[in-house]
Image 1 (cartoon, rainbow, N blue to C red):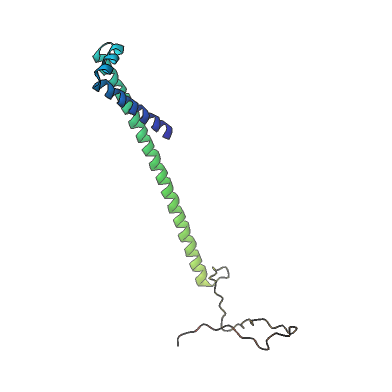
Image 2 (image 1 turned 90 degrees about the vertical axis):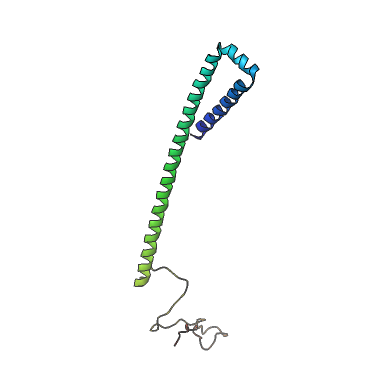
Length: 145
């Protein structure tokens, strides 16, 4: 479509240049009148060519405009579909996180309920001579009183 549109635009420019030469330069007008026979035949031929080129230009511009609008509409529909999927996924993750399901999204923070024992850091290994005699649990998050 783009190639046809460019071709029609080039033809219109060439016609406009030719018509300006015929109208403004008497020597060019005389040679074209000699080819056409009479000045009326020359101007009638220019009129027919202008009407055909104008029609082609209008058709190609309208078809191009319609195709662009369809493409924009299709992309907007795709964007809306992706937004809806993202919203559904976020709502699903929010509900999953609220229920405490094991497949809940990971936040990067490890939490331990109060009734579970905390892991020892570093793990005790009696075979190592440099192993600490006691373990230090990680700091509990401070809670406002």
